[in-house]
Image 1: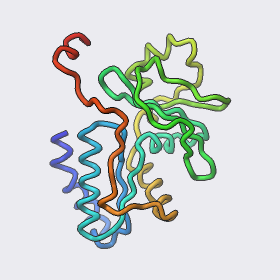
Image 2 (image 1 turned 45 degrees about the vertical axis):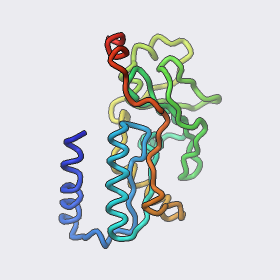
Image 3 (image 1 turned 90 degrees about the horizontal axis):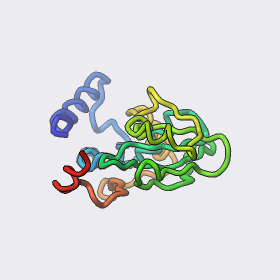
Image 4 (image 1 turned 45 degrees about the horizontal axis):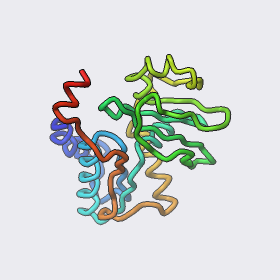
Length: 198
């Protein structure tokens, strides 16, 4: 939102200053690439690109749903984030070593259409399970444990961990090749749709 765009660069400057660093000391920049808020992921990408261009360093676009899976410290995670407009972003990951392998690629759907991957040992997390709690509580097909509390959204710590891992593995990209991840083409409801959804 507008508040984020006004404060993000001063926050970065402050972070560098308190750690006695300059932007030239940085090897790579990671950012939450989405899916998520259309404006938020565009802002994150543009800030990362601008900073990286300025000092000629690479960028790691970190999938937002993978970052939340990282936070759980579990091995099989179904992530479900509120996508607004009565929908969710969902994906399923299995940890193999220190790599999160997508078992189900990110998709957008109505909450009742989220599916549990095959096999045992899955847990679920994300804001979608809070926003649409009643849907999941009444669903007979949804029977895996849901982690709440701190597991509703990821933090910079998870983005940093994935950024470092991918940078060391040679998976960073040039600033010009860093792009957000979108899984939904429609980003807003029409006025009629807004009225009918109330």
